[in-house]
Length: 220
Image 1 (cartoon, rainbow, N blue to C red):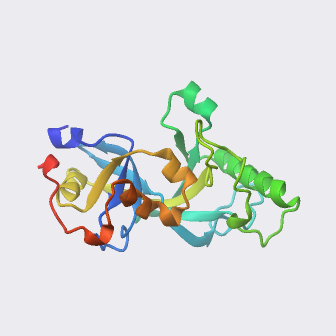
Image 2: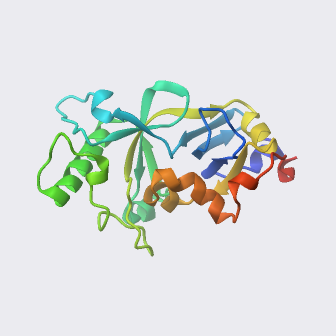
């Protein structure tokens, strides 16, 4: 690994600059999980798709309700899905992880479906096929330690991923296509996904419309 690769911490967030107009990445926020001389791997975390989980996944002996959405993770491997899960405070403390887990196993799928079923029953007392994600309770489901903000999206089924070849991501950051930011779990799991890109710039005190394309000198 050369000194350019060492400048990227893991895990972290990549925020697309306003002039990045590639439709795959425009106004996206990426959870970056792998980065080395061999390439980089991440998942877009602020794009929900119109496709429901029950339309793309079948697990034996598992009935998937209509409310569970899918998310767009990136343009690579569009037929492959990942489950991104928020870890509870207890799991985070005992497992020493970054506050999230990534899986593709049937057991985690069952856990996700159980969560949505139970959360909806807490709100309405009855499951219906017309239920939507927005119907789920937004309070006292899960909270982060030292925070009263509810965890809105503890599970996400993400289709596809974002990948970069050797040296590609560093080159794109140097060219000013991305801003790298420290991982903030509350942004991913507690923030309405439609607001995440704007929130990232707000945290920097930057108005996206006033940013001119530039090379980030600290990686040159």
